[in-house]
Image (cartoon, rainbow, N blue to C red):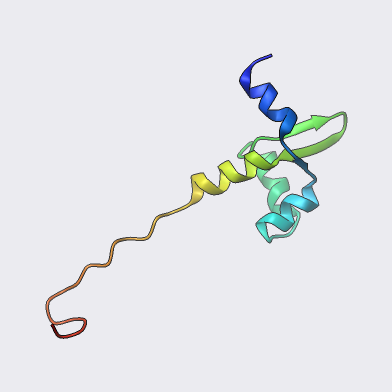
Length: 79
C-alpha cells in the first residue's frame, strides 16, 4: 500500500451536494469540475465522491495572493 492510498483511508469523501455546500455553489459546479477532470474524485460503483483533500487542493491551487500595497508619493497619511 503506498502513501497516497493509505492517506485516502483517513480522508472523508463528500457527495456532490456536500461539495457544493463547501464551495457555496450549486451542485452544477462540482459536477462540471468532475466532468472536466479538474478535480480528483472517486467512484464507488455508480456513486461519485470527492475527497476533502481534493477540495482543499483545488482551493489552494486557485488562491491568488493580494498584491503588496505600494505607497505613492503624495498618497496616504502625512508623516
